[in-house]
Length: 208
Image 1 (cartoon, rainbow, N blue to C red):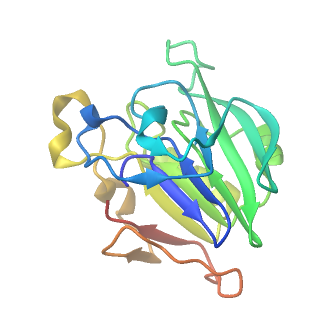
Image 2: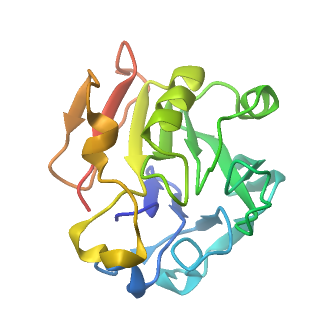
């Protein structure tokens, strides 16, 4: 739906992640979910009221389970100073659905440590911020992708024209520059199957 707001669903369970509020500038979508994951407490990631269906809500670290799915919340930071800039901590959520392992990085602000990588484990689909300023920039995002080696990488948290000066972050084109295996979907839905993963990391750019 734009920014870091996604809905991941199969035939049984719907998982919403990091819903923004109307001040960010994206259209507010009509979303119903069973589970809501929020990486941290900032307004552009924690608008629980945007998700209908009275979902089970998870924030923070550690192991959690709902609707037959096991989630891991991996402790990270919103900056490269272990949260000391005032931006605080951030959770990378990891889980598996239908044989596909997902990771959503929230507002990750640093190069993943060896401990982070160990906790996150193998990843098929990675949703990762690329805009910089508030999060990792395109260079560090690229390094994290190279470390995790996902089959699918989905850039998020980048500049849109309607955002104005409140979000001094880069456009997605900065991250895409020089990248191979880039697919612009031209819509906001990506259908995944564990039986047909890309042979090497492919970047999918979704429209909101």
